[in-house]
Amino acid sequence: MNDIIALDIQGAIARATLCKPPVNALNEALLDRLDAILAEVATKPEVNVLWLRSDQKAFCAGADLQFMRECFATEKGRVAMIAFTRRLQEVFARVDRLPLLTLAEIGGAALGGGFELALACDLRVVADSAKIGLPEVALGLLPAAGGTQRLTRLCGGGIARRLILGAELIKGSDAPGLGLTQWSAPAAELEAFARGLVERLAALPRAAVAASKQCIDAAIDGGAVGFEVELNGSRGLLANPDTQARVRRFLDKG
Image (cartoon, rainbow, N blue to C red; front, side, top):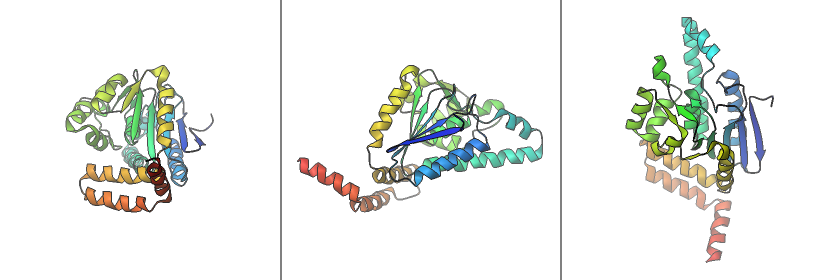
């Protein structure tokens, strides 16, 4: 593959494969490609699921080390590092806001910014042998591409403090029990397991998924009146032709 993220769209499934040797290190080029993929799938109403995976030994091992070396040397470089981190936040937020389901298949290490990318997805499945975590504090840094916010919202303050403040790496087999992923699977079976999930999820109507995501976000954020968000979402779905057809089929079975 010549592309750093290869996109393959088959029906309702968009599969985006990170393929930047050796460990899919995050840099501007990879972010630009990811951003372009997000824009493309968002405008394709037939796509219901974005399946994010890797064909390298790691899912994504975080920021490009050469870029970090260059940035830490000067004040100008440190300003550039903050600008890059802001860009990470922005692109990962677009993953979060996609009006369709997103699934991260984590077959190898997902560390730092790589795990922050996975946290921006709706769902995560990890190989039982993979290592995941946010080890930035061990370097005197913090996970600033959304990691402190998403991990805390996902798992609560206790788990976030354990993993972030302790710079602890977790084995994939332990991840579901901590709320970091929804599933784990043996590494040899991971792709087949993820494919089965994606095929089931792809049959779900995109409009209902998008409206439900908004309601869940309202419940997590706490700033919006979630019950009203539910009603507004339901109002739109009731008039949706696909919803009407699905409900009619369900009622006709009765």
